[in-house]
Image 1 (tube, rainbow, N blue to C red):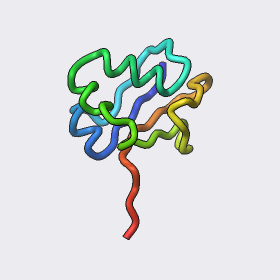
Image 2 (tube, rainbow, N blue to C red; image 1 turned 60 degrees about the vertical axis):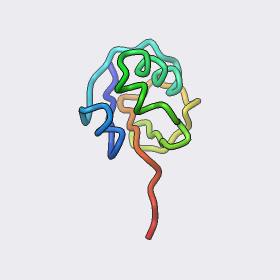
Image 3 (tube, rainbow, N blue to C red; image 1 turned 30 degrees about the vertical axis):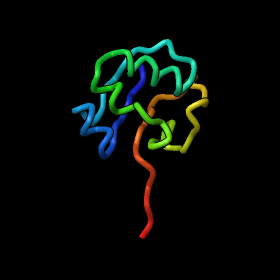
Length: 82
């Protein structure tokens, strides 16, 4: 089981802030493909990965990062400074 967190417009498109899922995904990118295949709302949220960032256990990661040992995956838009 892995905890998946959604922030900002990602949460708005999917409609929930978090969920616990069972996955066989090896990498973050594999997890994204599993999520996109679930429903249209997931496909819409993950349509453009260039508009997203990901963190594994609260540390920034790449979509190619392995999921092995991770307890939490968070998806969010890039932060902007001001």
